Length: 387
Length: 133
Image 1 (cartoon, chains in turn blue, green):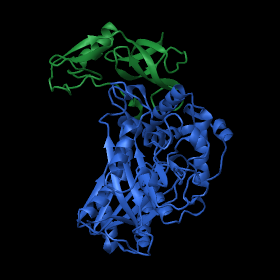
Image 2: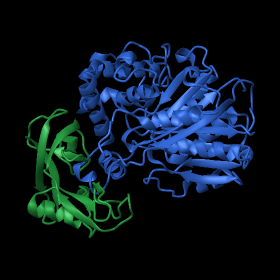
Image 3: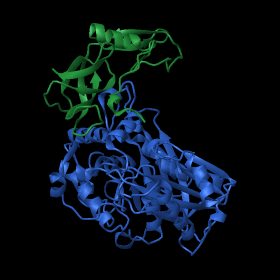
Image 4: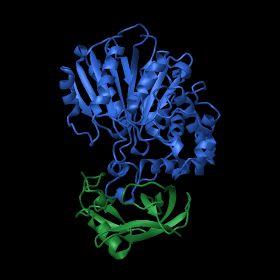
C-alpha cells in the first residue's frame, strides 16, 4: 500500500508584506523543495489554494508553472473550500500520491490580506458567511458568529470570560517562541481586557488579525532527505453537516459534531487513537473554537474546556497542547494558507525542531481545520515511527 | 470592482420566495414555507422541498414571538451597516432558528423573549428584525 509523507515545508513570516502574490510565494516554494532536498524538476503535481479575487493574475497556479518551468504532468489545480481551502489543497496532494498518480506533489497557498480595504474584504466575506438573501442583509461577520458562540457558552455553563481570555494569553506565549509569528510580545489577561472591544465579548488581542502569508509542503511517496525529517500523513478525515452557517432546525451550536465525525474517520483503521495524539493544531480565529474543538474531541468534559485551558492544559508543556504555533490569533491568520501553516507546525514539532515551544516526546500530532457554523472539518493525523 | 456605496445586501425577491417578503411587508407577519405535498416546513423558503422534491408550497403565518438563543454586540461591521448593532440567533416559538438583528435599544441576553419587528428598507423590502418584549 502506498504511503504519503510530508518531506519538505516552508512558511513566510506572518504579518504585513509589501509584495505581490508570486513575490511572496515563489521563495517559499523553493524553500520547501530545498527542505526535502528536491528541485523544481522533481515536481510532478502542483496544487494550491485558489487565490483571492483581488489577485490580478487569474489561473494563478497555471501561470506559476510557467514562471517556474514546473511540468505538473500528474495534476495541476487550484482548490477552494472557504476556510478549509489550504487543508483541501494538501489533502488533494496526498491523494494524488496515494493513488499513484505522482511521487512528488507541491501544495501551497498565498494570502495577501493587508493590502485590501477592510470594508471591501468584509463585504466579500459577508457573501460567503451566510445566506446572501437571509443573513447578509443583517451584516454579520465571522467574529460576530464566534462572539455568539462565546456568549452562549458563558450562558450555558457559567464560564468565566477570564478563562477564555487566558487562551489568548496562552497563544501569545506560544507565538513568543515562534520566529514566524505575527504577534510575539507576551501579554496578560489585563492587556486583553484593555484592548478595544471588537464584537462583545471579544477584544482585539484575542481575535485573529488579517495577515499576509505563504506556506508550502512537499508531499512524497517515500521519505526523502535526512532521516527523521519525513513525516507520514497517516490519515485525513473530513465531515460536514450540510448546513450553511445556522440551521433553521434548532440545534446545539456548542457541539462541534463534525469534529468528532472527522476524527472518527481519521482514527478508524489508522491504528492510532486519541490518547496517542500528543498535540493539536486548531484553526481557531477566536478562543471559543479551541474550547469547542477540544470538548468535541472529548479531551475535556463539555463546559470545562475553557477552565482547563486557563489552568494550563493546552500549553505546549500541558496535558493536551493546542496551537503551539500561536494559532490564528497570534501566529496570525492568512486564511487561504492558515491550514498549511498548521500542518507545517505539526511537522516542525514531530521533527523535534520547534525550539523553545517543543512538545516533549511528540510522536503524533493532529490538525483540525474547523469551520464552526460553516459546518465542515478537515483533520490530518501525522507522525509515527516510519520516517 | 463592486461599488462600495451599494454594499448593503438586500434580498432577491423571486417568485418562489415572494409570498414571504410580501406578507412581511404588507401584513407584518413572519410566514413559514410549507410543502403542499408532504407538509415539511422550512426557513428560508426554498425552490424545492428538500424532503419530497415538490415545488408547491403554502406560506403559513407564525406568531412572531421568539427566544434569543445567542447574540453578539457588533462594534465593527461591513460598509453600509451601522454599529454598534446586536445580531442574534432567535428560536421562533414554532421551532425555527433565524439569524436576525435585535432593535429597540435594550440590551438582550440569551433566553430573553423577543417579538417580530418588521423594518421597511425601501418600497419592496421589509426586513424581519426583532425587539425585546
